[in-house]
Length: 145
Image 1 (cartoon, helix red, strand yellow):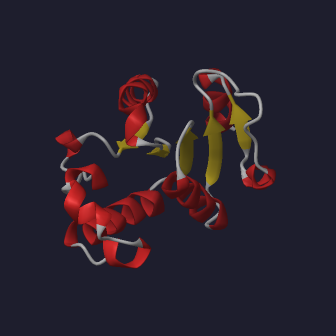
Image 2 (cartoon, one colour):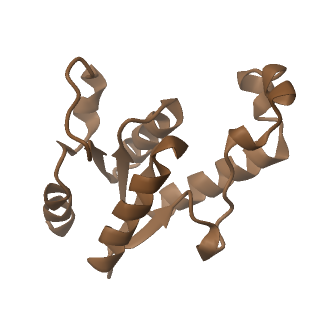
């Protein structure tokens, strides 16, 4: 059975996410790429909302938008489907919550710095991750264990 991987990151990293997804697929993994609608996945970025709308939303009212609700359900469904979650750095709060949820569910978790580690950027709670790396080979080794 192929290992199923959920990629968590920021839309700012779309280019590198697509590269990593392709690399992992070429190695035989099933990969959920939240930026790629070609699989039929619902794809949504809050930046699709007009600035006037965004400026009137808060943490609670944003989640009342049907797109935010649908995106949440889609992401949760795909995290639940996955065997492993790879958080591609740099990223924001949402990706960190996704990784934490996955760790709590007992899934393999990886924090991946494809451009190398950044000095001054660290978190105590990264200790929940099974692996923190800047090397794709480390990830594939972990997934094969």
